[in-house]
View 1 (tube, rainbow, N blue to C red):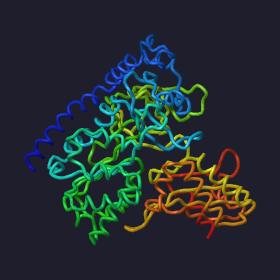
View 2 (view 1 turned 120 degrees about the vertical axis):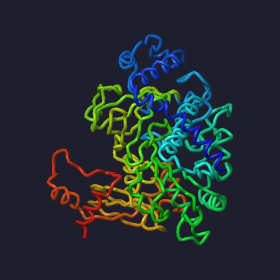
View 3 (view 1 turned 30 degrees about the vertical axis):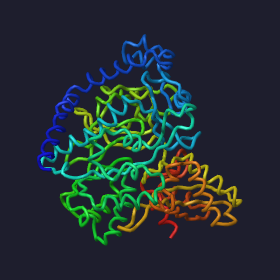
View 4 (view 1 turned 90 degrees about the vertical axis):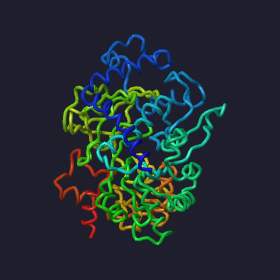
Length: 506
């Protein structure tokens, strides 16, 4: 196994030279990507509509092609989902990544072409390993198994020919991995892609606890649930008693900071490494490339052309859109991407700040709207407002204001939850029904929240505080923020606001 580990480490380190190239020549690499995308898609339905054949520069692109939200891309995506090809990308698209929806739909579907699989998602996964073994040359990563927690997939029912499928991006990737990658991972593909989460966690725990696991990849939420179950089954006090050679957790999707302390309890080793990635349904964007910094290297040769909208321009009817060479350090930008999966000038909804220009490194700074995404649930304001509306109508309540934030895992056996403070001018006739309706409606309108709430495995019932009228006004006044444009954030991924308001309720 040591010989195989040495060989695989050497293979993955070969890529470091190419990564160094785009770090040293970022603008040139991005321009090459841009022209490749335009040339590839000029005969698609979308390319003909927006005159890709006449685009000779990024400035032409800016003039001719408008910025697109999901709702604006949706008609093209729906055509593709029904089986029509060459709509937004020339090669056949037979996979779609499913994620939480926006205002108008419970879920959204992102096209995944073979190019985006190979040149973006797979490449990102391989580069994650390349950067890791480059930083830790004594790693024994390839002497054991990699544990990956995936979602599920199903036949695309919108396609009358049943020639395509959709699922979580992790499931799409797992279903298409090359043979060598399948052999290196655990649990079995059948178990990893199960849709029934309670049974899945149980089966994963029993399959993997006998393996020599050296790395874990996944969202912190489900990883914690799995590790806790394995410790229960093996009567272990920590996971190193089960997997003594575990050395790294590759994580993404949600901020890791609130989970770090719990992971240090579950994996009490000073030599355990944590490496962040920035990957989404739409693409693989960034990887932590330094040992002592959580900044993410922006990956520039994955078939994605990047543009950025300064946040002060976000609400403009005609926002100024900047290419990579015009961004500034420390400023907040909304991310806009054009990809080899057929997304064009697409507003992904994330905001980033540049921490370095040479090379280009970023931190994810938030979302273009208030949201909660502490456990991968992606609850947006529209979801919350709909849930409040339904619960209030069912109990004859009148809501004045509300705010919500996550409750992170508390202790090794704890669960996450959402905590709400809701102020009424007319209280609910039945508080229990109000709570039930709010939770049920969130599950109805947001598929990711529903998955996390399933049988309370990862996310517990919301904790709801009913506040007397005037509380939010009192809090705003105490901060000198009463009146004008000041208002309480409806949703926040941190607990700064909700903890302060709870203090006032004592």
